[in-house]
Image 1 (spheres, rainbow, N blue to C red):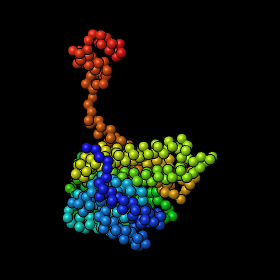
Image 2 (cartoon, protein in one colour; image 1 turned 90 degrees about the vertical axis):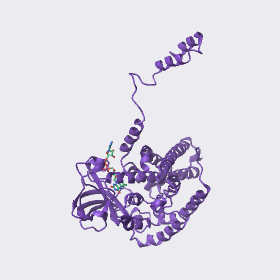
Image 3 (cartoon, rainbow, N blue to C red; image 1 turned 60 degrees about the vertical axis):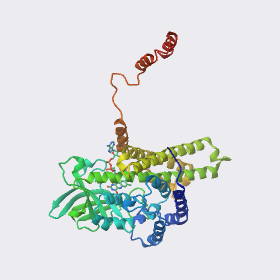
Image 4 (tube, rainbow, N blue to C red; image 1 turned 120 degrees about the horizontal axis):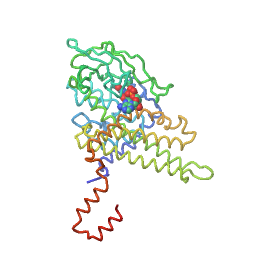
Length: 443
Ligand SMILES: Cc1cc2nc3c(=O)[nH]c(=O)nc-3n(C[C@H](O)[C@H](O)[C@H](O)COP(=O)(O)OP(=O)(O)OC[C@H]3O[C@@H](n4cnc5c(N)ncnc54)[C@H](O)[C@@H]3O)c2cc1C
């Protein structure tokens, strides 16, 4: 049975979220519209506002909803999370207020999935409590989309692993209490077994921030550069700081990235909805040559196209979430759909935000609406968590796995043999006259 309705009990929670976002979280967005302050746990003024809001969310049973109950979350499932995240995605601070901000969500997931009890107690629990932030350190200066080019190594030395190499674009490294680092442990093994994942605590000797690089969505007057260019100079971690099996780092990273991509997409639904809402309000409010923008055919086309594209994208995201729920929360079972969502996200976000910005005219091209921030971030959604091209290839390969080459020289849909077969199939019914007519029409 296909059902697009929301359970009334959960709908009440969504309504509470809507009110809470407008009344309590939006003021935080406008007071601190800074991507670095969101992750800076030492920023006392923002924390004084944030902590009571997080406590309120916890008391509503809406904290860290990306995790199932067995992993320490509420366990509403990914479809419910999609409905939540499309609301939270409208706001810069909301994911942090609700304990679902990337990259900490993905890091918490793999700690919960692959961590020992000791690792969970020391690193997962404070992350889930919202007391610390973390970093995922995988991409290297020579490439991020192809794990074959990764050279950061970890070698065993007595009861320690010793990590050496450089990592690039390690988001929030400067604020993180710990970093999850992917390093080669067996260079001769096939790629799936070549690397392992390590937990490196903040302040480990040899952990050097070469530079904090601002990404293009940061504002130089208020942000302090959040993308770490790091060097691991023989950083030593105890043996029990490996996350997962030796050689299992690639699988750990894949488990993390799959879920993270869908969560991003859920939030982008919210951003697109916000841009579309702005577009509609503007169309109804602005007059040109005595006519409302909303009455102009080209403006109606922009609104209609945006609504259609957003609805298609949203349904794809929710279906992907549904597949993950049906696979007991395992995103690997939705690989093709996650890749579709990842490709679709970059395009739909680009197209809708561009139209909304354009409809706002010169105001759209200022920093006095949220549209400028959205627009600046557009290109990063085609890059972060892997470039569009890589995911497009995954979509095609997944689809092609379910198809076979044609048996003969012509495609299986070639009509002449089909017509011949159909004639044979119904020869006992069709009389000679009908067959003649069919000859005239069909050949
Ligand atoms: C906002 C943001 C946050 C990020 N956060 C993190 C983080 O926290 N931790 C982390 O480790 N990394 C992070 N990254 C890095 C991200 O994972 C990489 O940018 C991504 O994997 C691409 O790697 P690259 O930048 O080296 O590009 P490259 O791998 O050099 O690719 C560059 C371009 O080459 C083309 N290309 C590459 N591969 C293919 C292919 N197979 N087929 C066709 N064309 C291809 C594409 O056009 C692609 O855009 C972040 C990136 C962004 C933008």
